[in-house]
Amino acid sequence: KAKGQLNWAHIFLKASALDRAGDWAGAKALLHEANRIDPGQAVVLNYLGYSMIEKKINLQEALEMVKKAVELKPNDGYITDSLGWVEYRRGNVQQALQILQKAYRARPDPEIAAHLGEALVDLNRLEEAEPVLRGALAQILRLSPRQVRVVAPVVGGGFGIKSMVYPEEALVP
Image (tube, rainbow, N blue to C red; front, side):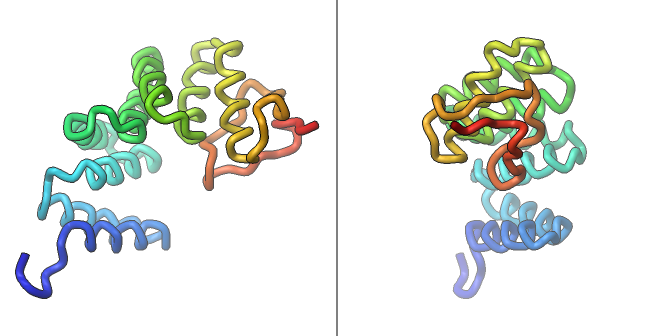
């Protein structure tokens, strides 16, 4: 790296800030630049691919990026989740389910749980979806899973910063 030249990590951080500020076009350009500088960074490929999945932009290109990220970090739950989520968005729910289960085993995160729960609900496996969604809500609310009851089979959307928990979706004793 030449003196004064930004490395991929600096560019990635700037891209992330632009994305959070609502400038997807600017963020996408910087993410591609970071990937050009160092194509071996799974975090860059995953961020770019997952963002495209969420925005429903060119799912085939997103799939290719996420597959490359998985090759680089095959045991990363977040990256595996992205692969499952793109398959889900492409309509391959059964295939997505297997991948999302692997991701959830690797990292039982609420966002991954939301994706897994959605796939289970789509496959009408509600009895399996309920504890996954209950656990995710409990984690978000910082409660024991015994204190949360999912009363709607579809809670809607992702968890984390993307959604709110409404009283009709969860009862907390």
